[in-house]
Amino acid sequence: MNTGKDTVGMIGVGLMGHGIASNIVKHGYPLVLLDHPGNQPVDGLLAAGAAKVASPAQVARQSNVVILCVTGTPQIEDVLFSPDGLLQGLRPGTIVIDCSTAIPSSTVRIAQAVNEAGGLFLDAPMTRTPKEAAEGRLNLLVGGDRALFDRCLPLLRCYAENISYVGPTGSGHRMKLIHNYVSLGCAAVIAEAAACAQRAGIEAPVLVDILAKGGGGGVALERLRPFIESGDDSGLRFSLSNAHKDLGYYTTMAGEAGAAHGAADAIEQLFKQGAQNTPPQTTLPHLVALLAEDKP
Image (cartoon, rainbow, N blue to C red; front, side, top):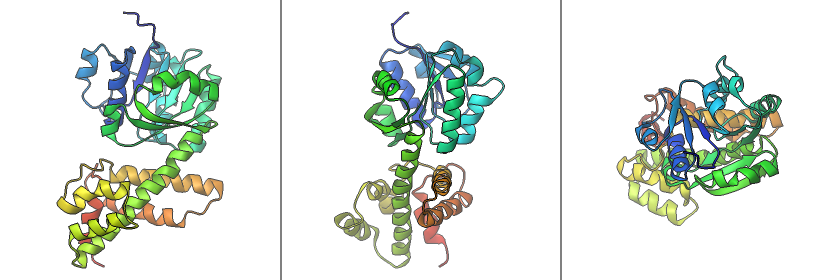
């Protein structure tokens, strides 16, 4: 059926990408998915009319807009530059929107490669969680050509509530890393404080109540509160391995910019310790328990 809307390709239908894909379908856009073992179950998307293909090049051949939502820079570069990668199938005028978290210097190189292949590029990383992704209420931080940003707004509004134009290509990814440093850094400070409180004999409800009424109140505390009080990690479904990756990207960016990053280095090491000493995909709230178990 011809809806008159661009066909959208999705590469990366994980916890965040699945919510994006669901909202794109809900708004009547034809959807083409890359078949990948890291995807969340896609039966509902296929039942709603989405198609499934075997390679990034095939996604590109069938799409007017391709959205990338993968783990990080190595995966993005593989999707673009592998022998059956996106660039091999990219048609002139196709728009590539990268919603992943990436090292900005790589983003600039990727945008140049997309442009040289005749395509157009926006970096549009997200904040918020899989819950908001499913609800179509993500925050997007967008870098690239302003006219292209304006052109893509109707599609972006399908899955985002707050959409900020940050500046030229790479600006979205730079702002995302700054945001995640602050957000994850606050969570790390609270996790370490909660572990200290536990070892010092402070009751969890007392700790949370006093922090919430004072300088510790805010989003990070509210996301960690369920785990601190009852061991429920559902408030922050973000893995320690991804937290370590994002802080590493931030320190790389800060180093390239000649900016101070001493505090970020320490937080990166904390997440590295957590990721190395827990099973894969362990969520960030478990850092509280891990640190409480460590000997001083």
